[in-house]
Length: 167
Length: 303
Image (cartoon, rainbow over all chains, first blue to last red; front, top):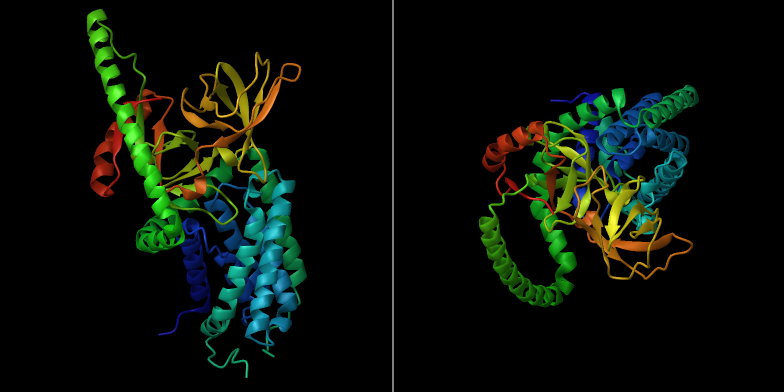
């Protein structure tokens, strides 16, 4: 039985949101931004770029609505990150290491953008006492996860077992 | 290289979505989280809350394991310190019990009764946090358990945590005082002041206007009767350093007792007490004890 691509992406994002808010919401040592990572990795699939942007916007909106900060903040950030990911994805296809670094850099950019836009809109609480370590550890965690799971996720969504073999 | 569809309309789509996003942010700021945004927030949280509760139940052993592994080095020292503290607290408890007996005795003599300062309490588990940048807590109790927006939240020791900002039937979001922009009216010694969070710091700033004297280090900061969001007398933190009045203003820093990131259990106070919350709290007692093991709703005296 084959799942429709839309259902697959929706399930993946829902899973990312639930795991992000529960498991990684309580473990303080390893804190990736799973939703942002899924959005970034969607740029590597064959899904139409406009749809990737829309999915990024909607998933950011859901994360905003689940929290207590400004509604629209992560929607804007995730959309921007997805756009940059789409424009630069050719650099990520060189190999697994390149994909990991690419995802880590995009996550870092996304976090900085969240803090900057959030501060402009008066969300000073985003700059917590551990903001420095967060800006380093979250991209690092996403970098590792991207290196491990990006080929699997792309193959799963595009239903093409030959993708990202890095031969 | 992978063959994909051309990215022809990507830029117009991006611009459209960014404009919508900025409009949403502006709307949220203007409406202060109320109205349509509030309804959307509650709706989304209601949909995702059951999944979060299920996931929290499944991942709890993993979280406990990781917590134990990261704290293993300091466990021995912590145990020793806790044992010493336990002995002190037992002695304190005995003294308090003596005082309680004497108080009851005098109340009987003068035929006095409690002045109705009972505050309902609902114990709730922290099931998650929105993301790495936010300090908000998601708890597993909601309107079905008598929780309402604005109710104060303390930890299991009675230290102030924050207040409820959004609530669904089965979950609620708590924003800690360290993340709030609004000041909190507090008491230090016999002086009233305002406690404000500071971006990038775990310490909070205390400002005492019309100060009559200095504020000394290690003084406890309590919620004030002048506060509209908290009942009086609940401990918040301690003053970090001495500060003398400049003209008639004292400014210093306060270390809150609670670190929201480490909380696993919180207590929501049914305050201000009114008939609606009182009824809701009474109803909660049964449902909480039957549905969620280890969590109860009890009624006790406020601080």
